[in-house]
Length: 152
Length: 405
Image (cartoon, rainbow over all chains, first blue to last red; front, side):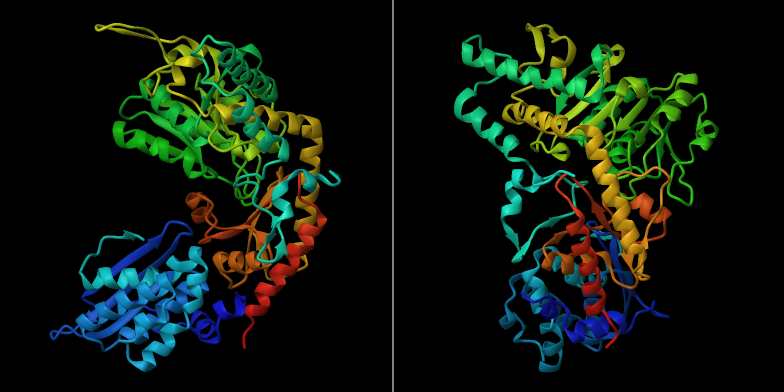
């Protein structure tokens, strides 16, 4: 496994220049996940509309390139999605990372799928899987309105 | 200094990610020489029986071997007869025993315990349990800018309510060595027992616990080229009767009736059930291994490598070493500008270099130093200058991957 495949351009781009990396001015859902192994943390903020779609989503946190890129790409992918389809994407992405199986992403729209599939190599580095899933765990908890800090 | 020593460690015959293994994680656990591996295998193949029970020859011989390790460990730590050695699972268990089976007996609500900002979680969490149960106050002796303990502030932290001081022998993150004799001298003035987390000290530092005069010294077999599953707790003899057994069962009792039970005397009351017998027996080989090389040579070897590594890393402006202790052992940690320790660790791994990234079970210290995590380099007898060159090259590779496109 080449290290370049893990640190693809899209991942490096998002990790050095993360999008939506702030606390939202107004939000009604938030949760923080924590990786005990390295002390990384991801705090996700969501503004859910009355029609339960994600109007705004952002994150704050500390983490490695994989974790920050995953947080950043996640906010782009989940923005404007319905709560239901957000849960479905979160579930698919987690399964995709754990199993290195791109077919689980087939239900995700193509533009999102391209971004998410850049994490394919993470599965080859089992110790790094949690780096990629950490913000997603936080987002899922936020959507469930669980604000207690999660030790992921 | 130790020419061809890698040949004694079979792990170095294998490739890791297609590269020669550069093992820089001995503070986490050390690799095992063939003699220790053979000792485990030989005991099971030719000498195995449960110890301290049977009176047939095989059992007697096994018991003697088990006790021989205890005797040799005493001289290894410089303990003489003022101390007893108890076998545990690991240093973590030893520290937990000090907190639970000893300190808790004397500690009341509102009492105080002193730890330091350098402590590994293994020497904080057991005391936190106590804090939860008894409402005690935990105070932390701070570090200075160089990362050394401000021992001069210890006196100020001590009050009539201070019941125990528990400190590390050496930081597993920065390599800062604790001036234990100074700390014990201050504690003694106030009649406070001192427990030492010797996890990093035992294999890498000059060790004479009689001179240190601490009350408890905890360490692990697996960090001194020995097997996993064996921990050690040296207890000052005068405290042995005050120590309550933690696990009850066979092997730790003298007399059992329907009404009452008398515990075994001495260390045996602390070793219930079948112990990691082969591991204890093999640990004797790791003591021999260290003694043959001689501790003073090991200390010099690891210190020379540390200084060389720090000098070479100084030429790289993006590398920031966490602290520069005055008195340092063979461990240090660093960060590369704008690159997370986990990314560094993964990239170095692809080059065959094993380092630890993260907070190394020392979140308090990382918080004090205001960093989220770090990359740790720690040396053992098998490391050499080539390993440092590999590390420097590996670091450049990390920087190249994260260079702005």
